[in-house]
Each structure stands twice: as C-alpha cells, then as structure tokens.
Length: 551
Ligand code: ADP
Ligand code: MG
Image 1 (cartoon, rainbow, N blue to C red):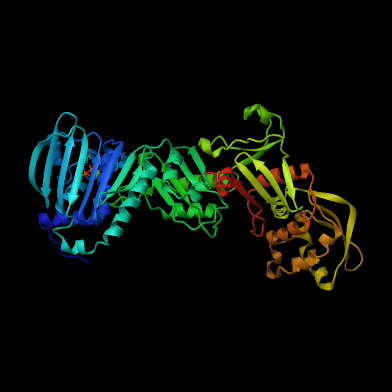
Image 2 (cartoon, rainbow, N blue to C red):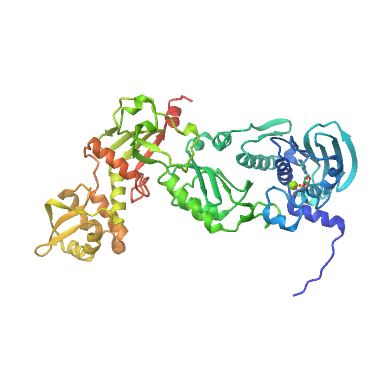
C-alpha cells in the first residue's frame, strides 16, 4: 500500500532528530560524556540540577575545539569522527552521526565553552538558533551546559519523570561508563551536592570496588580471555553466590549495551540458578565485527559473529568461573610460589589460577600459618581445607556423590571386583526392577551374578566407591522409586552414586580427604551433588575477616 509522503519543515526535522536521540536528561548526559570521552578526556565532571530538567552540564579536560569548528559542532551532521560512508563500518568512537549537539541545541538553551589550548571560545544556541559566539579565557577542554531542556516542547517535557528519578537514571548511566572507562575520573554533582566521585583506577577490580556493594564485590572472580579477535574481561560472582541484586554491567567495544542473548548465555553457564550471577563484562571485538548503527541511542549493537562470541563466553565461564575457576592441584614444584615456610608443606593443595586468568593481586590471599594440618574432618561429616584464598568446606557425602556420578556417567571409572560379593534377596518388585535396569547398571559399573530365583549377587562396583551390604540393600527399591525416570541412565546413576558414596559418619584418612578434594575439583560441576545440594562451600579470607570485624 502506498502512503502519502509529506516533507517536514526544517524546524520539525530538527525536532524529530531530537525525538530519536534526546528523550530525557539522561540522554543529553550520555551524548555529552561520550563526546568528552571521544575528545580523550581523563576527567569528566557532570553537574545536574532538578534531575537535569533544569540544567545538565559536562566539563572535560579533552582536546577541545578550535573557535572556527565550534559553530559546525552544533550544526546537524557536523562531525569530526567520520568522513566517508565506509567509516561507518569501523567505528572507533562513541559518536559518528554529528547529530547530538545539533539535536540538543534544538530543544534547549545550549552553551559551549571550549579551548584547543591555543584559543578559547564560546557559543550560545537557543532552540537551534545561534545567539552569539565570543572568545573565552578557557585554556583547556570543553564545558557544555544544557539548560531548560524541552522548553520549546512542552509535551515532551511533561513526559519526564520526577527529578529524583531522572537524577537516578543519570547516576546509573555514569556508573555504567565508570565501569567501562576505569582510568577516567568521574564526578557527579546534583543540585550542588556531590553524588558520585570516582577517581581513576588502575584496573577493573579496583574500579568495581567503588561501584558495587561489598558483599557482591567479595564474591567476584576475575575472568580474562583473549581468543581470536575476541577479548573478554570481567568479574563474575562465584557459583555459590546467592544474593538478590541487580548488578549486571555489560559493554561491547566500550559501549554499555543491552544484549539479552549474552545475558542468557551467562545465566545458562551458571546452570540457571535461582539467583542469577552478578557480573561486569567487557567484550571487545574488532570494530568491523560489531554493528553499532542499528539504533540511534546505540544501546543495542549487533555482533556480526554472535555465535562465536557466545561460545567463547559460555566455554570460558564454565571452565574458569563455574567449575574450574580454581584448579586444585598438588604443587609439583613448591618453588613456584610462596615463601620458604610454605615450601615445607610439599603436598599442600593450592588453588592455581589458569594462565588465561590474570587475577588482580588482592584475590590471592597468601597463607600465613605454617605447620597446619592439611585437612580437618569435622564430626566425620565435613572436610575443611585451607586454600590460598581462604578455606573450603566439603560435605563428604555430597562431594563423593558428585565424583562418582560424573565418573560413572562418563564411563571412565571401570569397576572393581568385590572381595566379598554382596548377596541380595529381592522382592518380586525389586527383581522386576533389577531385570529392567541391569544393563544400565552394568554400564555404570555394577555387575551381578544371578543365582536362584530373586537372589542376585553383586560382584563388582564402580572403582573408588565405598560399599557395604547395608548400603546396597535398598538399591532396587530406590531405583523403583524413580517411576517413569527408570529408563534414564542419569537418574539411575544418581541413585547408584548416592548408595556407593562415603556416608556421613565415616572416618577418612588424610589421603582420602586429599583425594576427595582433588577429584571433586576435577569434576565438571563440583559445587553441587547430583541432586543439586551444595557439595562444597568456600569462604574467603575477606569474608572471614569481615565476620570478625577486621575490615
Ligand atoms: P558526533 O559525536 O556524532 O560527532 P556531536 O554532535 O556529538 O556528533 O558532536 C559534533 C562534533 O563536535 C564532534 O564530532 C566533535 O568534533 C565536536 N565535539 C563535541 N563535543 C566535544 C568535546 N567535549 N570535546 C571536543 N570536541 C567535541
Ligand atoms: Mg557525539
């Protein structure tokens, strides 16, 4: 169907462009700080009054503009950032449309004061009309002040939220940029009061300490991956983190973005927990790999090879954060770390960080005690072990269940002949269940000999399990309890793991404890038993210190 085409008058055109990009004070602030960052500023001071409705101003120490550029800056399509159509394929700056200042100028009273270090200049624009230009004594950087936003668009002005709400949006926005541009100093003043002051930081961890609540910060683990052209740098909460929060920072090529598919990838890598992880994630890809030109506000971007990035992210999360975040190993060469006291305990397990992870220094809390026992078994139920960054506590049964479950499911463990085979006299139902499942059970490492009617003898069980007769008597009753799930190998494996794992109440030797820990952390999902209950919990030195009020 053809529609009638109307050509809009020039003043309307200007306002429509504004309608796309400039919808509220926070969009003004976003454009202004992006300009400041594009100009190479290292310090950006933002000041807003009445949530920005009355005034937003952004002051930077960037390169500034020459006096004869200034008028072009506020003209539509005036930009220094791209020159040819092809440049759009390789955007390395935040801005490129040359529309922001023009759009803002259309709907406000705008004043810019700038200096390219040689000449200072100033321009005043009201509703898109230049009211004056003048020299200024400014010596560096740029200050852009926007007052009375939408003074000439009362309808739009009415759509704004309360000053409090608009102010919060601005603060959230600055926090997002602060999480990305960690080496810049940001301040926000609202109605003459300092609302944020974030000095330049050395790295992401130091920056995030200023931006997220402490209980979340303390659960953060670093992830740094560089594969192909994809760079991932982030902090992710440990898999046992269970707090409610809304801490998710995501950027692509330094732009804060919403990217639901990446968010889902992360949550999924954590096996869709009840409380999703908190994280800050910065992804960088070559500029031509990301399309930023799909939305005027650039909140949404499109990765051209989305699948590739998703896979790298998902795999590295699983490997370094969710499961193998820290690999438990015996130290082969104790000279590789630590002090001389530490060298004495040759078999002390250590969390070592993979070479792909560059953890900030403060994540590594060094052991200070020496001459400690390696492991403690508490009430024949829990195993405590000291780690490089604190301690871990295993539930011996749950941990062993996890180990057995994974090894029998992978068919890796083989079976061991029992010195004293275990004879079971089965009920009719149990015998029936036995007939239905003996092939799966054989796959899982349990072998039987059939005797007379309804008497079977278990003569092999999976290796490294601990069984006695009493543990196995209820085996078929419990398998039968699976109901329809009886055909599922994984479900049967859970029952087998439960019946063959170390129980609470069993005393373990030092070697057995060591083994349990090593093998648990070699599992794909060490944090839970196959039924989803925790198998291990960790406590960092920071958490312990906090509990004792040592901050
Ligand atoms: P864009 O950022 O898309 O180029 P803008 O309308 O935001 O368009 O800005 C127009 C031009 O004005 C920029 O290309 C830049 O040359 C100049 N400019 C704007 N803000 C600043 C600033 N804070 N410091 C230096 N130059 C600036
Ligand atoms: Mg811009």
